[in-house]
Image (cartoon, rainbow, N blue to C red; front, side, top):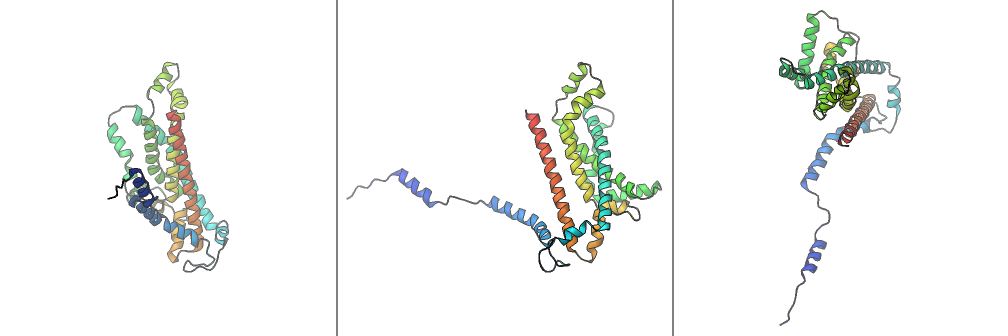
Length: 281
C-alpha cells in the first residue's frame, strides 16, 4: 500500500486557479440595467439630433444643420430669452429672501415658528398643478394682468423654498458660537452676518440657486398658467412644436438643455464638495 500525503497549500492554490477571478454580483447587474433604462432615451435623443432627415422615423445620414438652425430660429431665441429672464430674476429674489428666511428660522425664536417653518417648505411637496391653479386664482382675484413678471412671481414661490432648504441644511453644520465671538470682539450684528456667517453660507446658497435655476428653466405647468398673451417660455415653445411630431431641431435643443443642466448639476456638486472639504479642515 502506498502512503500518499496531501499538501493543503497545493489544494488551496489549485482551487484559486479553478475559481473565476472576476465575479459579477447581481447588484452590479441590477445597477447597470437601471442606468441603461434611465439613460437609453437620452442616448436615442442625442443620436437622432444628428439625423439629416426631418423626421425621426429613419436615419438618413449625419449632420449638424439642426444645431446651426437653432441659433437662427427667432421664436426659440425669444423663448430662451424669456426663460433666462424668469429664471435669473426669480433666483436672484429667492436667494436674498431664502437666505434671510433660513437664518431667521435657525437663529431666532418667535411665536408660531414651527407653523411658519412647515408652511414655508410646502411648495416643495405640493404638486405643480395645484401651485399653478392657486397662483392663477390669486392673480385673478387681485385683477393683476398676466405677463412675464407674473411668471417670475410664481417661480419665486418654489425657488424660495428650495434655496431656504439648502441654506438651512448648511446652517445646521455651522458653529453657532462664531457669530457670538464676532459680537464679543466688537462687530455689529450686520458685520457679523456679512463677514462671518455669509461666507460660510455661500456653498449652500450657490447650490440652492443652481437647483432653483434648473427647475425654473424646466417649468412648464406654472408658466403656462401664469403667462400673459404673447409671452412664451422655452418649455412652452417646445410643447407647442411637438404636437405635430418631434423634429430633429427639438432633439438638438433638448440635447443642449440636458448638457447645460448637467453642467449646472456638476458645478453644484463641486461647490458642495469644496465646502465640505473646507469645513473638515
